[in-house]
Amino acid sequence: MSWHRGGCHCGAVTFEVLAPAEVELVDCNCSMCTKTAFQHLIVPKERFRLLTGADKLTNYQFNTKTAKHLFCSVCGIKSFYVPRSHPDGYSINFRCLDRGEFREVRVVPFEGSQWEQHAAELKPLEANP
Image 1 (cartoon, rainbow, N blue to C red):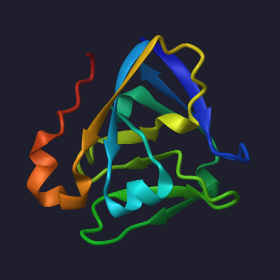
Image 2: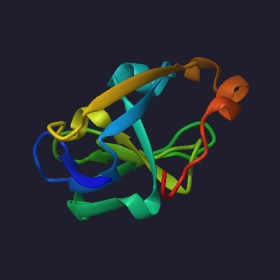
Image 3: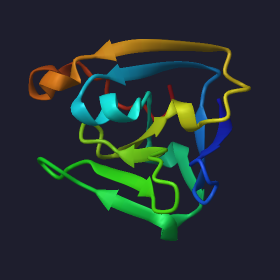
Image 4: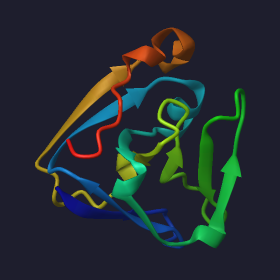
């Protein structure tokens, strides 16, 4: 496990996430993830550190209003958010991470377009995998 840096396009929002060199990403096909090409690396809150840009984040919520979709108010990129499936963690957009230190990346499809029927298939968070 090591800390990996990431951020939005303009650099106003930067963060670090504690993750192993081998990760499994969730590729969701819900309306939001499809339109943003979001690749989910879901981690517990204690494995996420916001470094800069808290004042630049804008929250968008819809449907059940459980998820907190956080966008950079300068460039519009959603590099992480609090997901409905894991409200006690963060979903990091893998595309927004500096990827140099990742050895293996597996992508697992998720039927998010039928979220209610498939939500139980998502893995629970593990603080120390």
